[in-house]
Length: 253
Image (cartoon, rainbow, N blue to C red; front, side, top):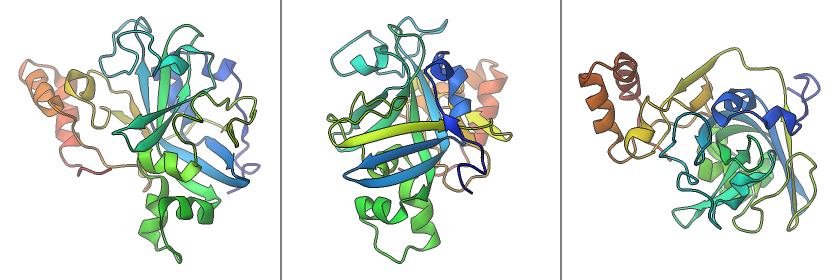
Protein backbone atom coordinates (compact mmCIF):
# COMPACT_ATOMS: atom_id res chain seq x y z
CA UNK A 1 0.00 0.00 0.00
CA UNK A 2 1.36 3.43 -0.92
CA UNK A 3 2.17 6.14 1.59
CA UNK A 4 -0.59 8.25 0.07
CA UNK A 5 -3.13 5.43 0.54
CA UNK A 6 -2.06 5.10 4.18
CA UNK A 7 -2.10 8.89 4.59
CA UNK A 8 1.39 9.28 5.97
CA UNK A 9 2.89 12.66 6.85
CA UNK A 10 6.35 13.87 7.78
CA UNK A 11 7.01 13.59 11.51
CA UNK A 12 7.66 16.74 13.51
CA UNK A 13 9.69 17.25 16.66
CA UNK A 14 6.43 17.90 18.51
CA UNK A 15 5.26 14.37 17.60
CA UNK A 16 8.27 12.98 19.47
CA UNK A 17 8.32 15.33 22.45
CA UNK A 18 6.72 12.91 24.94
CA UNK A 19 8.25 10.16 27.05
CA UNK A 20 9.58 7.26 24.95
CA UNK A 21 7.16 4.75 26.48
CA UNK A 22 4.26 7.01 25.49
CA UNK A 23 5.52 7.85 22.00
CA UNK A 24 6.67 4.35 21.01
CA UNK A 25 3.26 2.91 19.97
CA UNK A 26 2.76 5.81 17.57
CA UNK A 27 5.76 4.66 15.53
CA UNK A 28 4.09 1.36 14.66
CA UNK A 29 2.94 1.50 11.06
CA UNK A 30 5.15 4.53 10.43
CA UNK A 31 7.85 4.53 7.77
CA UNK A 32 11.56 5.14 8.02
CA UNK A 33 12.88 6.18 4.62
CA UNK A 34 16.59 6.31 3.96
CA UNK A 35 18.70 7.19 0.96
CA UNK A 36 22.25 5.89 1.23
CA UNK A 37 24.65 5.98 -1.68
CA UNK A 38 21.79 7.08 -3.93
CA UNK A 39 19.60 4.05 -3.14
CA UNK A 40 16.31 4.45 -1.27
CA UNK A 41 14.78 1.96 1.15
CA UNK A 42 11.44 2.40 2.89
CA UNK A 43 10.54 0.31 5.93
CA UNK A 44 7.15 0.05 7.60
CA UNK A 45 7.90 -0.19 11.33
CA UNK A 46 6.27 -3.17 13.04
CA UNK A 47 8.12 -3.50 16.37
CA UNK A 48 9.76 -1.00 18.74
CA UNK A 49 11.15 -0.72 22.27
CA UNK A 50 11.24 2.36 24.51
CA UNK A 51 14.20 3.32 26.72
CA UNK A 52 14.38 6.13 29.28
CA UNK A 53 17.64 7.77 30.28
CA UNK A 54 18.81 8.86 33.72
CA UNK A 55 16.23 11.22 35.24
CA UNK A 56 13.68 10.68 32.45
CA UNK A 57 10.19 9.80 33.66
CA UNK A 58 9.15 8.65 37.10
CA UNK A 59 10.79 5.21 37.02
CA UNK A 60 14.53 4.65 36.53
CA UNK A 61 15.23 2.40 33.54
CA UNK A 62 18.12 0.01 34.27
CA UNK A 63 18.06 -1.25 30.67
CA UNK A 64 18.95 2.07 29.04
CA UNK A 65 22.34 3.06 27.61
CA UNK A 66 21.77 6.40 29.37
CA UNK A 67 20.87 4.94 32.78
CA UNK A 68 24.06 6.35 34.35
CA UNK A 69 23.95 9.73 32.64
CA UNK A 70 25.45 11.33 29.57
CA UNK A 71 28.51 9.78 27.89
CA UNK A 72 30.23 10.16 24.55
CA UNK A 73 28.49 7.01 23.37
CA UNK A 74 24.92 8.04 24.25
CA UNK A 75 25.21 11.81 23.64
CA UNK A 76 22.68 11.73 20.78
CA UNK A 77 19.99 10.45 23.16
CA UNK A 78 20.19 13.75 25.07
CA UNK A 79 19.63 15.92 22.02
CA UNK A 80 16.53 17.23 20.30
CA UNK A 81 13.87 14.70 19.30
CA UNK A 82 13.83 13.32 15.79
CA UNK A 83 17.53 12.59 15.44
CA UNK A 84 18.55 8.95 15.14
CA UNK A 85 20.78 7.36 17.75
CA UNK A 86 22.78 4.74 15.85
CA UNK A 87 24.86 2.53 18.12
CA UNK A 88 26.94 -0.60 17.68
CA UNK A 89 25.66 -3.82 19.23
CA UNK A 90 28.11 -6.65 20.04
CA UNK A 91 30.72 -4.79 18.03
CA UNK A 92 28.99 -5.77 14.78
CA UNK A 93 25.41 -4.57 14.29
CA UNK A 94 24.37 -0.94 13.80
CA UNK A 95 21.02 -0.44 15.56
CA UNK A 96 18.70 2.52 14.93
CA UNK A 97 16.76 4.46 17.57
CA UNK A 98 14.51 7.49 17.28
CA UNK A 99 15.39 10.09 19.91
CA UNK A 100 12.36 11.47 21.72
CA UNK A 101 11.49 13.52 24.77
CA UNK A 102 12.64 16.99 25.72
CA UNK A 103 16.11 18.08 24.70
CA UNK A 104 18.44 17.52 27.64
CA UNK A 105 16.49 14.46 28.85
CA UNK A 106 17.67 11.19 27.34
CA UNK A 107 15.18 8.95 25.59
CA UNK A 108 15.10 6.66 22.62
CA UNK A 109 12.91 4.19 20.77
CA UNK A 110 14.71 1.21 19.27
CA UNK A 111 13.39 0.21 15.84
CA UNK A 112 13.37 -3.57 16.29
CA UNK A 113 11.67 -4.78 13.12
CA UNK A 114 9.87 -3.77 9.98
CA UNK A 115 8.57 -4.68 6.54
CA UNK A 116 10.54 -3.51 3.50
CA UNK A 117 7.96 -1.83 1.27
CA UNK A 118 10.33 -0.20 -1.22
CA UNK A 119 13.94 -0.90 -2.14
CA UNK A 120 13.78 -4.65 -1.56
CA UNK A 121 16.68 -5.36 -3.89
CA UNK A 122 18.89 -2.79 -2.16
CA UNK A 123 17.98 -4.13 1.30
CA UNK A 124 18.59 -7.71 0.16
CA UNK A 125 22.02 -6.82 -1.23
CA UNK A 126 22.99 -5.18 2.07
CA UNK A 127 21.77 -8.24 3.94
CA UNK A 128 23.62 -10.62 1.65
CA UNK A 129 20.41 -12.29 0.51
CA UNK A 130 20.29 -13.68 -3.01
CA UNK A 131 17.42 -13.32 -5.49
CA UNK A 132 14.85 -14.57 -6.00
CA UNK A 133 13.80 -14.10 -2.37
CA UNK A 134 11.53 -16.69 -0.85
CA UNK A 135 8.77 -15.58 1.51
CA UNK A 136 10.84 -16.28 4.62
CA UNK A 137 13.88 -14.37 3.34
CA UNK A 138 11.65 -11.41 2.42
CA UNK A 139 10.04 -11.46 5.85
CA UNK A 140 13.40 -11.54 7.58
CA UNK A 141 15.11 -8.64 5.75
CA UNK A 142 14.47 -6.21 8.63
CA UNK A 143 13.34 -8.65 11.34
CA UNK A 144 15.44 -7.76 14.36
CA UNK A 145 17.35 -4.54 15.13
CA UNK A 146 20.65 -5.61 13.56
CA UNK A 147 18.94 -6.64 10.35
CA UNK A 148 16.87 -3.47 10.39
CA UNK A 149 19.94 -1.25 10.61
CA UNK A 150 21.69 -3.18 7.88
CA UNK A 151 18.67 -3.07 5.56
CA UNK A 152 18.24 0.71 5.81
CA UNK A 153 21.99 1.27 5.38
CA UNK A 154 22.65 3.42 8.45
CA UNK A 155 26.00 2.74 10.08
CA UNK A 156 27.66 3.53 13.39
CA UNK A 157 29.39 5.90 13.96
CA UNK A 158 29.07 7.95 10.75
CA UNK A 159 25.27 8.15 10.78
CA UNK A 160 24.77 8.56 14.53
CA UNK A 161 22.77 11.76 15.06
CA UNK A 162 21.33 11.97 11.53
CA UNK A 163 18.17 14.12 11.51
CA UNK A 164 15.01 12.26 10.45
CA UNK A 165 12.86 15.40 10.73
CA UNK A 166 14.66 17.72 8.34
CA UNK A 167 16.11 14.95 6.19
CA UNK A 168 19.43 16.81 5.99
CA UNK A 169 22.14 14.56 4.58
CA UNK A 170 24.95 13.24 6.77
CA UNK A 171 27.90 11.14 5.62
CA UNK A 172 26.25 10.33 2.29
CA UNK A 173 22.90 9.38 3.80
CA UNK A 174 19.55 10.98 4.57
CA UNK A 175 16.65 9.73 6.68
CA UNK A 176 13.01 10.73 7.04
CA UNK A 177 10.38 9.54 9.50
CA UNK A 178 6.77 9.46 8.24
CA UNK A 179 3.82 8.92 10.58
CA UNK A 180 0.26 7.75 10.03
CA UNK A 181 -2.82 6.87 12.03
CA UNK A 182 -2.20 4.79 15.14
CA UNK A 183 -2.37 1.04 14.65
CA UNK A 184 -5.50 -0.49 16.13
CA UNK A 185 -4.04 -3.84 17.19
CA UNK A 186 -0.96 -3.15 19.31
CA UNK A 187 0.57 -5.67 21.71
CA UNK A 188 3.07 -4.93 24.46
CA UNK A 189 5.36 -6.85 26.76
CA UNK A 190 8.90 -7.16 28.15
CA UNK A 191 11.82 -6.00 26.03
CA UNK A 192 13.84 -8.57 24.11
CA UNK A 193 17.19 -9.79 25.42
CA UNK A 194 17.43 -7.15 28.17
CA UNK A 195 19.12 -8.34 31.36
CA UNK A 196 17.55 -8.61 34.80
CA UNK A 197 14.50 -6.69 35.99
CA UNK A 198 14.72 -4.35 32.99
CA UNK A 199 13.85 -7.31 30.75
CA UNK A 200 10.66 -8.27 32.60
CA UNK A 201 7.05 -7.11 32.70
CA UNK A 202 8.15 -4.40 35.14
CA UNK A 203 9.12 -2.59 31.92
CA UNK A 204 6.52 -3.65 29.31
CA UNK A 205 7.98 -1.17 26.84
CA UNK A 206 8.20 -3.42 23.78
CA UNK A 207 5.36 -2.71 21.36
CA UNK A 208 4.49 -4.55 18.18
CA UNK A 209 1.74 -4.91 15.61
CA UNK A 210 -0.08 -8.04 16.73
CA UNK A 211 0.09 -10.87 14.22
CA UNK A 212 2.55 -9.18 11.88
CA UNK A 213 4.99 -11.80 10.52
CA UNK A 214 7.98 -9.44 10.52
CA UNK A 215 7.92 -9.01 14.31
CA UNK A 216 11.00 -10.62 15.87
CA UNK A 217 10.73 -13.54 18.33
CA UNK A 218 11.00 -12.94 22.06
CA UNK A 219 13.97 -14.15 24.09
CA UNK A 220 14.90 -13.54 27.69
CA UNK A 221 17.96 -11.51 28.60
CA UNK A 222 20.49 -12.67 31.17
CA UNK A 223 18.72 -13.14 34.52
CA UNK A 224 15.40 -11.75 33.23
CA UNK A 225 13.46 -15.02 33.33
CA UNK A 226 14.57 -15.56 36.93
CA UNK A 227 13.54 -12.03 37.84
CA UNK A 228 10.13 -12.57 36.23
CA UNK A 229 9.62 -15.84 38.10
CA UNK A 230 10.55 -14.16 41.37
CA UNK A 231 7.99 -11.45 40.66
CA UNK A 232 5.30 -14.05 39.99
CA UNK A 233 6.10 -15.87 43.25
CA UNK A 234 5.71 -12.65 45.20
CA UNK A 235 2.23 -12.15 43.81
CA UNK A 236 2.90 -9.82 40.87
CA UNK A 237 0.06 -11.13 38.68
CA UNK A 238 0.98 -9.06 35.65
CA UNK A 239 4.52 -10.38 35.68
CA UNK A 240 3.26 -13.95 35.98
CA UNK A 241 0.94 -13.46 33.00
CA UNK A 242 3.74 -12.04 30.86
CA UNK A 243 6.02 -14.90 31.91
CA UNK A 244 3.44 -17.43 30.78
CA UNK A 245 2.91 -15.67 27.44
CA UNK A 246 6.56 -15.07 26.65
CA UNK A 247 7.73 -18.57 27.49
CA UNK A 248 6.03 -19.83 24.31
CA UNK A 249 8.22 -17.68 22.07
CA UNK A 250 11.47 -18.96 20.56
CA UNK A 251 14.79 -17.15 20.68
CA UNK A 252 15.87 -15.25 17.59
CA UNK A 253 18.16 -12.51 16.40
